[in-house]
Structure formats: C-alpha cells, structure tokens
Length: 396
Image (cartoon, rainbow, N blue to C red; front, side):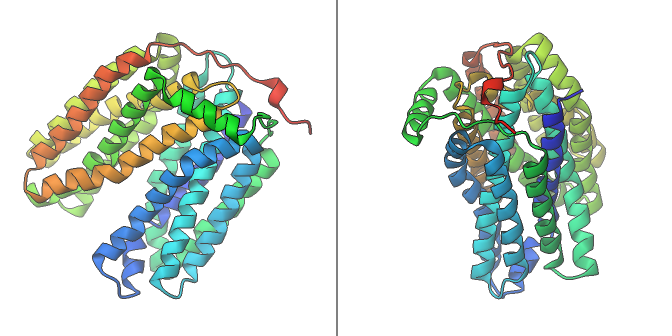
C-alpha cells in the first residue's frame, strides 16, 4: 500500500491531468472560433508545453526554497484562475495568455508533487510510490477527453474550462488541507542553483536527461502524432479504430505500472530501463510495419507492456540522483528534458511524415530509444537510497 502522502498526491495529479486532457478535444476548435488560422490554433497547444518547459527549473528551485505545499497550492490556484480567464476570453490573445498560465500552474504542481514523493518515500519503495502516482496521471489522461468532449456538447467550448477551474480549486484545497508540508531546505536560491548546476554536470544525470528526452520524443512524436496519421492515411482506419489502437496501449500501461514499480525496486533500475527501452524501440519500429487494424492492436499490446514497465524508471532515477535538500531542482531539470521532448517530437517526426515516409519517422524515434538504452548504462543500477526526512517535516 502506498503511503498516505502518495495517495493524496495521486488524487491531485489525477485531477490536474484530467483538467489538462478534458480541454484537449475542444482547444483547436475554440481557437478557430476567434477566426485564427490552423497554425495559430497549433501555437495555442504548444504554448502550454513551452510554459511548462520554462517553469520546470525555476519551479524546482522554488519548491526547495519555499516548501512543496505552498507551491502546490499556488499551482492549483493558478490553474483555476487561468481556466476562468480562458472560459471568458474575449479574443485569441487572452486565450493564449491563459494557456501559458495553465502551463505554469500545471508545472508547479507536478514538480512539487514529485519532489514530495522522492523525499517522503519509505526506504526501498521509491519506484512503487512513483508507479502509484503515475496511475493517477495516466487515469486523468484517459478520462479527461471523454469528459471534455461531452461537456462541450452539453454546453459550449467554454464549459470544459469551467470544469477545469473547479478542479484547480479542488487541487489547491487538497494540497493545503491534506499535504503535510516539509520545512524548506534553508538554502538560498544561489546555493540551490549552484547545486543544480553541479548535478547537471554529472554524467549519470546527463544520461538521465537524454533518456527522458528520447522517451518523450517517442510519446509525443511517434505515439500521439505518427500513429493516428499513419493509421488514417496509410491504412484507412476509422476514428474509432484509431482510438482503439491508442486506448489499448494506455490500458495495458495502467495495468502494468504498479507491478513494474515493485519489480524495479526489487531487481534494480538499470536492467529494467535498458531492457524496456530496447523493447519499446522494437515496438515503435513494428508500428511502422503493421499493415492492418489487427496488426496495430497487437503492436499496441506489446508497446503498452514495454513502455509501461520502462516508463517508471526515469522518474525513479531522478529521485535516486537528486542531491539531499535540492530534490526539487533535480526534478525540475528532469521534467524540463521531458517537456523539451514533448515540443521537439511532434515537429521532428511530423516533418518526416510530411515527406510521406512514416516508417522513417518511427525508425528515427526507435533509434533515439536505442541510443538512450546505450547511454542509460552510465546511469548505473542504483538501488533505492531515499528515506523519510523527518527533520524537514514542518511543525503543525
């Protein structure tokens, strides 16, 4: 059973990710209501990721400097306020500003929550605690579009944003009421940035950042961008069939993450990471070779198993490699590498697909994963070393 702190944070990230995902189906359509181009609608989507990228390192240092609960509460309130701004936006410019602020709020909560799990995880259980946290994240991603699409049908394009605002307030309340805060590290911002730079110079952490980048290029570029395009344009699948292909891998991932967390804690990080990266790379290549709906479903089962098992290791390693007292800074840098992959992946692989070579796009993503597996050897097979830090728990 995960710790009480992890259960609370899992509920928080479920609500946060549900909110992010429920506006996804209507966001481009909402932007077009203001008479803007499709490119401008795309900018509205990417601005969220860019905002997260910018806040990740700053937010990580702020968590160490000010305390995790304060940052989580602030993140939830920013999500609520920015969602109200988006719902009431009179023009595209205000909507764009609201999306940037939503990115800031999302990043603030996510960095603070992951830092808290790293510091509070009982000895030998870090991967299992992170795996349980991931179920909340994945569950929100799965449920959000279903709620958002139907909410827009019952109301209008602003309705999902009102729901998102309400969820942001709940997240802020949960963090304020139920997250037991820890005392800030006591270090100055200058000291924390110096620690972050020193961590960034270590080969193991550099290897971890490359792994995170490669994994998120695959998630945003191959899975979210190429698979729907390939399935529709090359294989002629319907929208519902494409949804089945994506859903089956998501379901398998949700089912495997908690057993994977137990396995990673027991066996070690490196064997699971290297093997998982190679297996995921093989499944990505197979996507580009599939020639039927059934073939894509079969590959998705394999992909969900491989990616779901491997995906727990990088955030766990971020905890293993984080310096004491500067866990937030390490988490911020790790998340920045992942968010960079989210931005680069669709552009890089989408441009390859524009030339009509889907197989090459899948192969490029797979090659990055293979390179990450080679680099991952530098991370090492570190076992859990984290214990609770009662000295940093704030007095009630």
